[in-house]
Length: 451
Ligand code: NDP
Image 1 (cartoon, rainbow, N blue to C red):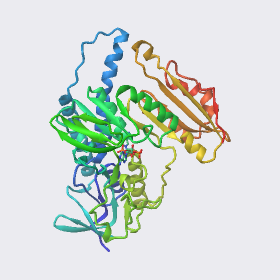
Image 2: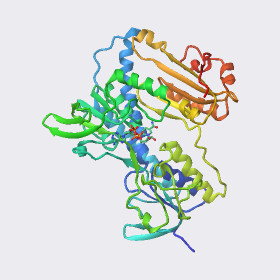
Image 3: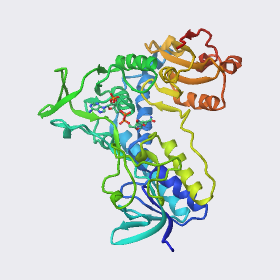
Image 4: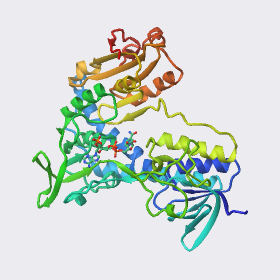
C-alpha cells in the first residue's frame, strides 16, 4: 500500500524532532504535526528558560560572595523585565533553529493538532493523511491537584511569562520543578515559601543527599514540610494558602509544581490498539512500539524517564530501528541527572537504598565539605559528595553530589561509571587541586554498610 509519508510524528519537541531528522536522513519521507510550539517543553517552558533563570538567580550569590574577596558592590537590584525580554529573544531563536532543522531536512510540517484515526491514518484540519508508521511524541503537561481555589495556582507553563516578579510566592511540591523554582525565586528577591508533603525534599534521590539538600534549601527560604494544600482564597492582598497543618501562607502567587502527566487525551487512541497506563502514559515495548504495531511512542508521553536527553535517545532509536534496520537498545541504567536547585544536586547510578534493596554488599563513602571559596565569602554553604561501591567487584555503582556546577561534574563521572570504574580506579586518579571534585578521588574513610 502507498502511504503519504513513511513516518508521521505527532509532537515537535525533543523526541519528535530528533526522530524526524534521523528518519529523514535515512531516506524516509517524514511529516511532523505540532499544535503549540516547536522545541516542546524543554525549549519553551522547561529546561532551557529554567536554566537561564537559574543563571540569573546565581548572580545574587556571586555579588554577595564577591565582597569577601574585596569587591565593593553597590546595593544590587534585579530587573525581571530585562531577564524576560532577553530570555524570550533566545527562546525564539532556538524555536527558529528547531524549525530550520525540519525544513532543511525536507520534513513536512503541520502547525496544527493531529489526531490518530487508524493504524496508518492521521486527521488534520480538513484532511486525512496516511503514514506507514506513526510516532507519538506529544510530551506531558503540568498536573495540579484539585482542591478549593486550586485554579488560582499557576504552573511551570505560566511562570516564565509572568509580566512582573511577584513580591512573594508559595511553591507547592518537593520534586525537580518545585525545588528549582523555589531556589530561583528566593534569590531573585521574592519572599519564597516551599510547601512539601514529605519530610525531606526530592523523593527518589539518595536519602542522605535528600536530608542534606533539604537542610541547605531550608537556609535560603521558608520551608514547610509534612504539609499539604487544603484551599486557596483570593483576597485584596493576594492569595492565602491554607495547609492541612492549619498554617496559612499569604503570597502574591502560588506555583503548583506537583508533577506532570502524559498528554494522551483526545489523541484518537481509542481508534487503535494503543494502550495507556492509569497515569495516561502510552505503554510501549523495548522497541518503543505500542500495542498497535505501526504506532510508536517516545519521550514524556511514555513516562519512563522524563528527561530531554532520554527523549532524544529514544527518538533516535525508533528512527534507526524503522529505517536503517539496526536495533539499538537504550540502557536506562546510569542515566545522570541534575536538579538545578541552589546548590545543584547531581546524581548517577544507584542510591544507597537502591543498592541495598538489590541485596548488594556495599561500601559507602560520603563527605560534607566547605568549598575553599566560602572561607572568604563567608557563605554558610556546604557541599556533599557520596560514593556507593559494590564490595563484590569494587565498582562504583552510585555517585551523588550537592555542590556548585554539580551537573557539569557528574556528567564526566557518568562516563566513568558506564565504563565500570572501580573504587581503585578512582583512588589511583590524581586529584585536581584545589577543587571540590578532587574529593571524589580522595575519599578513604568508608562507612561499612553490609546488608
Ligand atoms: P516530580 O514528580 O519530580 O515532583 C512532583 C512533586 O509534587 C513531588 O514532590 C510530589 O510529592 C508532589 N505532589 C504530587 N501530588 C501532590 C499533591 N496532591 N499534593 C501535594 N504535593 C503533591 O514532578 P515535577 O513536576 O517537579 O517534574 C516532572 C518531571 O520533569 C521530573 O520528574 C523530571 O523527570 C522532569 N524535570 C527534570 C528537570 C531536570 O532534569 N533538571 C527539571 C524539571 C523537571 P511526593 O514526592 O510525595 O510524591
